[in-house]
Image (cartoon, rainbow, N blue to C red; front, side):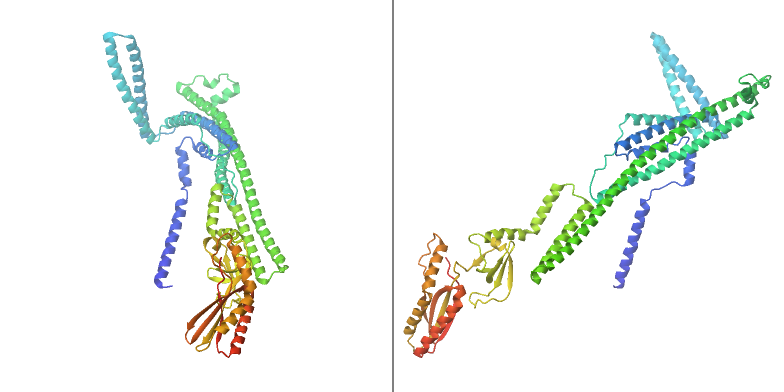
Length: 612
């Protein structure tokens, strides 16, 4: 690798690593730090996070049982929040926070603005009632005053809003914030109650390890959200219990520290001697302490009910988590069953592969056929096992009809030659087909048919018809598609007749006619029976068609050549006897020429067979 290629490879690797790091970094969910969470909790008078969590979990409830638990969780949280807002509002009234000088200033402005707002509201109501009763000019005057009062009331509303915002920024207005949050919570609860909750559709029952893993991942995601919600409810219940105990101890300590309350508790409501002769300020302080203790006592049953709601909520989340866990176990069981089936398919395929090898080793087939059959069977078993395992992993396709159609079209294109070859077998088995032992020419290859299968035709190559016709020893295999897409020549009739020629060259100066007559007589005697039989079979093969002046009798042809005269005697013979007859006629020609002392050359030429 050249230095430039190394630098490019290193650069690409670094870029790839940076991209992966960015994907992981951006994929993380941003979380608040512990200090920021604590600050947010303190800034919020009532924590409404459990309600948001329950609403998020409702979007994951995809069964009827889970949806019922989701509704119950939202109901419990809604009641608990109502009690929480009530306690927060009472606590803000009983234990007002210590305000800064700036906050006290804004609080005074707010009280003044609220007083003016109340007075102007009362004036608007009075003028409205008077204007409805009056008439004529008095009504016009009242309406003018009413318009002025409404404008003043609108100005008062703006001043109240502005003072409220200023007080909130200065750290005051806790009661107002609580009331505002409570109103928003009631409005949201009303919307949720009136609206139809949209739940997700149940997960379809799909087969296949991939789909089952997706189901498990979906349930695992739901479980990861249910567990923190349950833990938060349990933690809230424990925190409320501790708060109840602390408040109860605080109330008892306050009672013991107040002489009036302690004496009241001892005398069961009888007036104490210590209350007699007290100043107005001391009596007011005692009343304030008593109101504060009474307000705190009202929070005790409130805290008990909130604790009970939180415990019920934790139980609901626990039941919900158990349902999801049961579904997870069922999905895991299906995954294990799928794995067992896949392994069983692999083992069965291995067993059949071994069994087939042992079975083929006991057969009497030759080595080549046995190897071919073994390879074909092994491939078939492996392909079937792989397809079944893929079916177990991915499951059956959703659109089975479309899948089968596309698969059929693909197989048709891929196996076109085999399909056409199979149809070609029916053509070859027809009237104009070929049979075992026929001498044919297919795609330029000539030979004798030794095998006709459903898909293939096998020839024993014999070379060109003008040659000796001896087998070359090669087996040539053709797909039967040539019977439909191409063409073939069948040189065999019923008796496999062929034309052959005897050629004799006479030198110049010799009289060839006596030898010609003798040779013609010998050929006629040797082929007389063959000629009659060939004529009959060729006429029968032609059927009703007229073959004209066809004759199977030997024919003689003379033509001058360089150095003499060439004699050609053409005769018909059976293919399986052409060599014997050719040798016999050549021997006769040599004998006749030898008797007359003629030096001549004799040759025999094989010509194509006659056609109908």
